[in-house]
Image 1 (cartoon, rainbow over the protein chains, first blue to last red):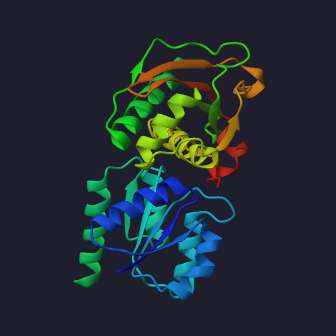
Image 2 (image 1 turned 135 degrees about the vertical axis):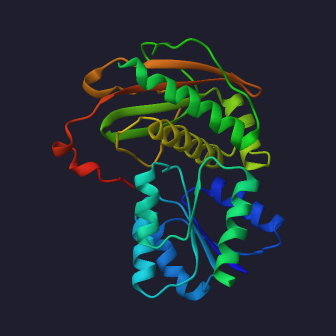
Image 3 (image 1 turned 90 degrees about the horizontal axis):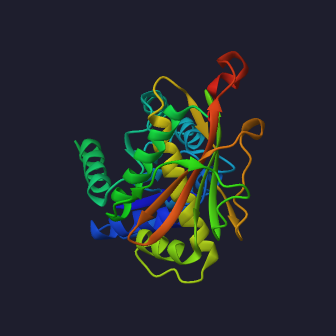
Length: 122
Length: 165
């Protein structure tokens, strides 16, 4: 499984990379914001995207809308500090498949990834 | 400053540290922000806007910052200021994000974090208001959370609560 991590924090990308590796997923690419992700996503063709919300240049919600508008169909998990119900609904409407609130434990992120990929495979 | 805004920051700080690296945080009674700031070596700052506006500053002595950030990153960070700044930025985002979610019925946006190095953490609140310092201690050492916020402008003047960043 190929995963694209989109987060402006190198620390957070490192944490997510470590969790994915422990799950046996080692094909991982990184982008530092929504614009960077849009420029990379065509070449990477990820099976899963983990997307932060608050990022400079282009935020995660805008990225999700543009990715979906261009026909991108891979599952997206929003990983963010935005935890209000209204934000979650906004993200789901934009095309997010699942949602993880920061801070999170490795178990929570692993479960969401498995849950999301199982739904896609069903 | 409205004291009801303080408890969400205490809860969010504790939750962030216990979730990210299984460390309990002791929070001493809140006190007014000291004139001139805490003098800590490195600080992460988040601006809030919308129904609540102001700033949150998470500041550390450098040794505490190294220990905290190494724990979060899962690797020794040492003197790598870029990595320290990145980890502290992520931490203050989580604390601010967790606190704003506890402000019932309020729509608040947070900025991307900015980092200040060199003891300059005397951030002015809205209209120059004084703020509250939460003196904190964890296994890695002492640190501080400074909160300078107030109720924001009425919704009609607050850009519809649009999210920043």
